[in-house]
Length: 136
Image 1 (tube, one colour):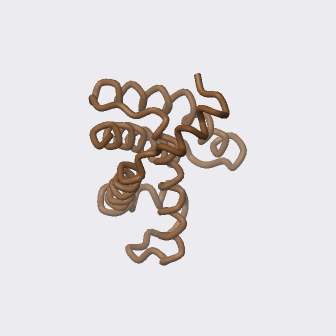
Image 2: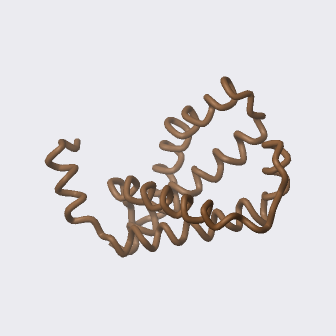
């Protein structure tokens, strides 16, 4: 279990190259996920127009939150795919799914939109924990 001292010790010894690589991997996967793979049905599910030309500020903001996500994941890195899958499923269904579901309940987002986003974040946890584990 982490304490505040352990938290700051971990941040002080963070494997920054692994965090940066996992951030870049997530940016590429997100581009494919929300672009050619599921972009049009995702946009329809959210009721927004699909665009292949994202605004530069949105790319910068996405890189920032993906970086912070990768820093958070760095507390739970695994160098084997089995543990990365378990982490992705546990965090995905027990934390991320519940947080995203508030949008279905309160913002009346569609279950389809919720599913696209939830599956992306589960994949993101799996990839980030595994990539950082391999590089650690």
